[in-house]
Length: 222
Image (cartoon, rainbow, N blue to C red; front, side):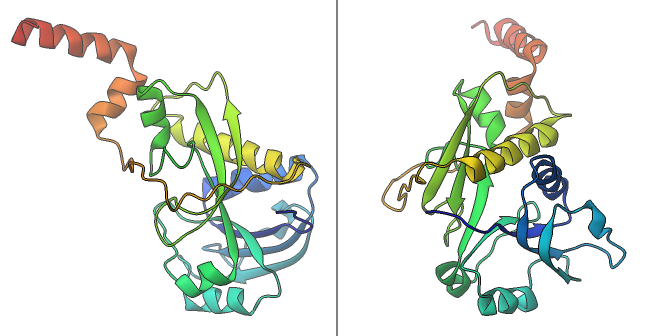
């Protein structure tokens, strides 16, 4: 998969802001930006250099945005949706390549709050660029970037999550090698959903781990 244009679908989120900041920093010109969830007074001067901006006054992707995408001459887009927002229009997903960045090594690490699970299982941190499919975090994988020395806690989780995704975005755009394509439909893996608060504490807090261990030792004599 070779890219000669960059087309974006951005919601009004900190992740989208991180993408915009990284694109501007690397002076990457955008062909088309579709914005939704932004106010009419949105400052277009904050955007990277772009040929065209299309603004929709909708909190989530609706039929107007879907119809616009279907009629577009472009055949692929990078998307930064709202947290938990899922595109279910199969015709759109089949017609266009909609690419998304996931902060886990697909296909094995699917689902949300995946950084906590990665740390809990003591695995390496990755971010994957993949094509959206009709199921969560399934679809062809085109690129993966490995990260070292990632440190996060409950307070800076979103910041680190955004950093990993935006850095992978730029690495993907600058990668001159032919994009790797991994078909994941026939691979059976486990989904990691929103992590339980207790496991979240255990994964990031060494003191909490010790306290929990001491409590179990004293109460259950283990």
